[in-house]
Amino acid sequence: MKQAVLDFKAIYGQVGNSLTLILKFVVLFAEILTMQSLNPIFSKT
Image 1 (cartoon, rainbow, N blue to C red):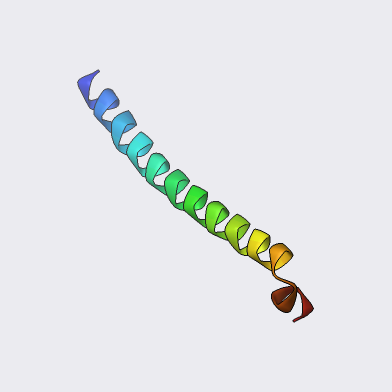
Image 2 (image 1 turned 30 degrees about the vertical axis):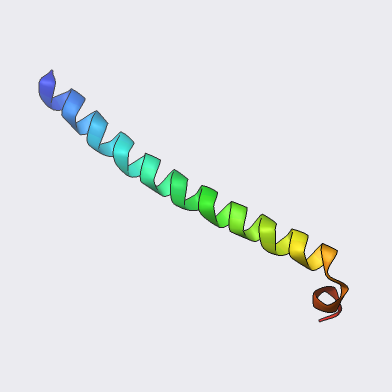
C-alpha cells in the first residue's frame, strides 16, 4: 500500500511539473498576443 502511494506521489509530481510548464507557456503566449494586439507595429508583420 505504501509503495502505491509513493508511486502516485511521483506520478502526480511529474504531472504537476508539466502542468506548470504548460501554464507558463500559455501565459507567455497570451502576453505576446496582447502585446501584438496593443502594438500596431507588431501586428503588421
